[in-house]
Image (cartoon, rainbow, N blue to C red):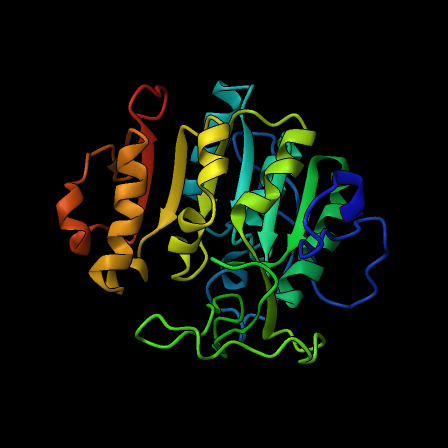
Length: 291
């Protein structure tokens, strides 16, 4: 499938036409905004207490308030598509696809990918989703190790040393059957896919467990080519990184006329990034209908 877009050979696009035979629980989700519902395929709750554990049939979902905000923005702005970086089992991807909007979803962890792929098939939205299995990094084609969290199976991050060196890089002949060994791409490498699909305007969610800086370090062409007025970003792990890495993110968006915001529309002080909330929003200065 990669060749149809004439893209980097390091990008692994999932063939959503191949039947997924792995057995796991899939449910029909709660309806949001009165009529938007989808399927989601879950991990065992004991292994994924946060995301899978948040789903309770028609009663609750993971991050309902945030997903609803994304859906409202897309409804108010029909020209916008969605880019989901760190898709996990696909809560955001599946609701947006059920809305009928195009989604580019990226995740690197095989147990997440097979569940998201199956949910896409069950909901019959494969024409709305391109699913990519790679980790985002500053270099393409590397094999890196993921950390392991036995109670938050979808919450792994790339395992790097504290001084930001890459001494944990895995040799290229390592087993690709190990879900904790992942192949990297640079974010800019997905731009031909987005262009080919006609994406010119999109909103984005970034939740990749402390690797958020790799998105901006490897993705300037994406942000400079597409109009991306709204970015939801987890800040929980980012704020604990060294100042140099955090400033890479803050300066990147500042130079592109984004304001950091809270969910209640308060503008954050760019110099006080250590005390920003666990989740923030980057908003283009001329973008309306968010606040």
